[in-house]
Length: 159
Image (cartoon, rainbow, N blue to C red; front, side, top):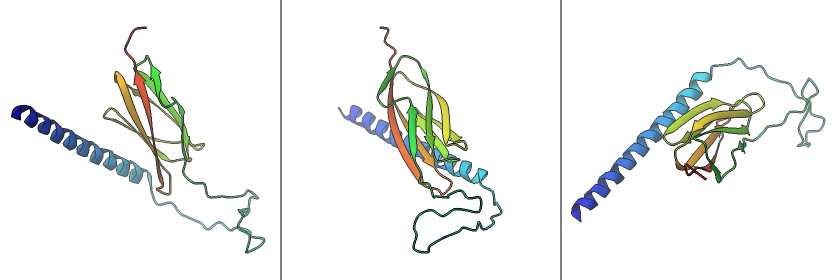
């Protein structure tokens, strides 16, 4: 009885330790990835035209296009949450704010990718038999973060 309790405590301590190390590793990877890509860029003021100071609608810029500040979003297009599949690999596809950093975590694997100019991203991942919790985070160029989780079950049963 006492030895089984000690074994449980050892396993719990080990799980917490591994989780902490994994968390620090992922956080350090995100920070390193984000700061490695960011370099000082010269900024020039962009003049805007405002027809009425009380108008809160977007104002046209010198090219005549309307500029608006987009908020960070994250849509997972493939696969759908709660999907059951019979293959050990799957491609995660989604859309987020253009040029955002996307982090995908699954089964002790970390993937760091960048969304393209249209905000699209995709990443092939390997699954383990059974339930696979996939955590996806998007960090936009203004450091706003949004997180989503999907559960994909890889069934090894022959039907």
